[in-house]
Image (tube, rainbow, N blue to C red):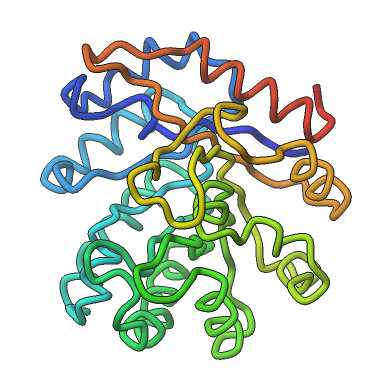
Length: 272
């Protein structure tokens, strides 16, 4: 049975002090099946306290999104830093019972301009993830030099069992959402490479950086009717996460907006 998750990054941010304890009250207002926990760089010193809180609260968190600076460290060739940070993320994920780990294999200003670093780092990261019982998922993160699908194909060529998370916003940003439906890329779902979806809208055109915001389903230009119909026809019944930013400048959270996203996904994939 498919599960619809909410990214904690949509709820917890700088305006509300990145206070992860807010999840206790917010969880009661949300109509999702569980959460995808987003790790922040300011949490490393207290990750054990965070893990204990999440575990004791009883939240269902099948997916963790590892801290994004790991991908930047990989891109700039600092494998030692990346490995140390990644292991901490995996330890947290194991303690809260997660099964999947989302990673930005490239990120930051370096992005994909040194992709050989990213390709070379993948096996070691995968090995660490397996040590903690986690399915490592490489996200189709936006690129400065080439494009996510080119890098996915490269990774699949080098590592035939690589797994991915498909983000609708990031694909639309590069004009690659429709590639998912094309025969040349059916290996993504026929071979089981896609293990998770991020369902977010995008309101810009091809690589419009100033419009690269994470929008609620229906607030941008993505044809979600076609997307959901396709995903349903592939037989996918795994996890979906909504990441649309819901915290306001005063730190309050728009739970109604997120619940509307959850309902749209439920209806789109036929479980409503």
